[in-house]
Length: 397
Image 1 (cartoon, rainbow, N blue to C red):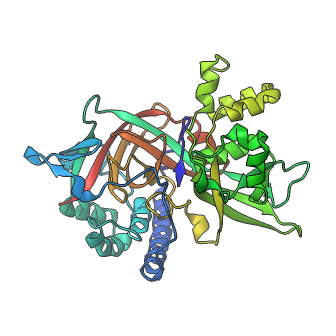
Image 2 (cartoon, rainbow, N blue to C red; image 1 turned 60 degrees about the vertical axis):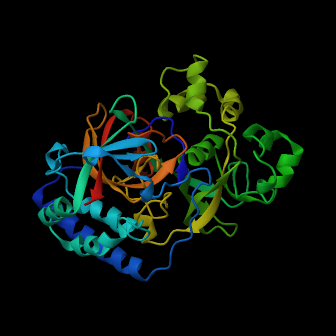
Image 3 (cartoon, one colour; image 1 turned 135 degrees about the vertical axis):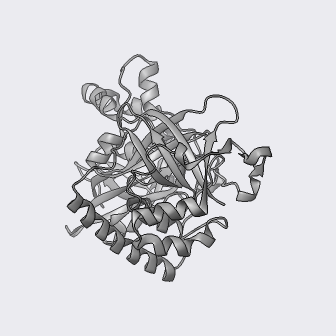
């Protein structure tokens, strides 16, 4: 899933009673076992990440003297496990489902560990922690130049109501890639797609679903995917997923930054942006056209098991709420387990996550976008989180 970020938020792993932890752990183990068995027999999922982002091969990492490793956009320095804040407190079983997902499409460095990862899905937290310390080496991730502290934001999967046909209520279309997309680079801008007859002709018949609010369509395009409760022409309703299928190759421009630069708002979070829209409905097109980039989608069925996970990320595996992050693949390769620490101010986080996605705004050594899940609550949290970040990669010894 390729997405852009305005400003974001997330929620910490909740504390619970011993009884709740036990039940959650049992459910997690059962799900992990099911996912592991399905991964062993399933065909490789159909996925093509955004063409403009290339994942460096692990061989691109060059060892330096003293065990330091340099990647194209980061430097890794080996550290002791005691340097990882909160390592002994994280309920690792929550992260194991995300790790098993990564094992559906592992890189050559982590593939040899996947049989052990699957076996440990029913292990205790102490067993999982001991295995990690035996098999992995933590490295602090630093920028090649500049500060060691980075930025954490968050993203989510929106859930909207939609219709298969346009109406007086459902007026904002979401499109499949047009047939002429590859014949013109960059393709038409968002404004041209709304106003030029030749652009509109190229989009005719490419509508997948119609939403009620064009701003919701923009939100879905920025996040890169979404769940739609769609009403079919015969009145039946079902939930489908719209997944990233390409862009018009125009640059992404933040509508929040556009509002800030004009002095129209002081709060560039999504709640702040929506408050401005409510007061200025006549300027919605002006706001939308400030971002020339358009995202196109493909429709995917959403069976019950798939609905328990997020969309596929750039690694090609389904994202896990609270345990998947988007990274700059020039700093951290996809499929790498990462220790994440962010002190707040909105939400303190110290936990194991998996590098499984990227985004056009996710660039730099110490940079991560935290997948918060789906729906309104995740969206509210993802709309506000923007706080300091430190990262450690956990690399096989």
